[in-house]
Image (cartoon, rainbow, N blue to C red; front, side, top):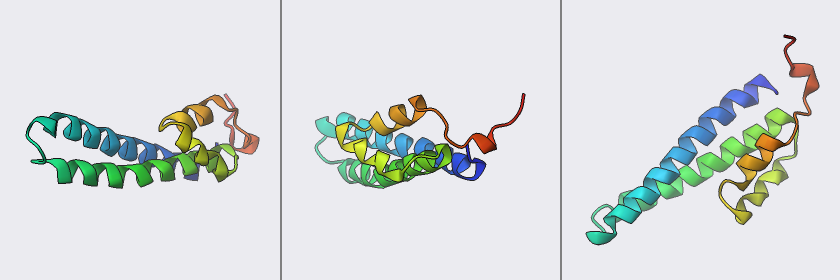
Amino acid sequence: MHPKYKNKSIIGVGVGLSLFVVGWLLFLFDAKEKAALGGLALGSILVGLPIYVWGCICLARAKGYSTAIVLTVVLGGLFPLVLLAVLPDKNKHYHRGY
């Protein structure tokens, strides 16, 4: 795995997924009070999603795959992350010897 993209993918997926989940939780718990935190929830979702997609793109680059694989996000939010986690690493020259 390419270390430059690996670090970016960890940051992107971690921060993006966290913001996305927090936004949805705010949205779900705010349904009782009708838009008290609705703007914050929507903003968190709209900011978190592109950061998550960027993290998945960096993960694809780190593993040596085309960034077009991230288009599978339309099949489900976690689909590209799970798919990239399962696929083998193509960047063999970055493997460390143990």
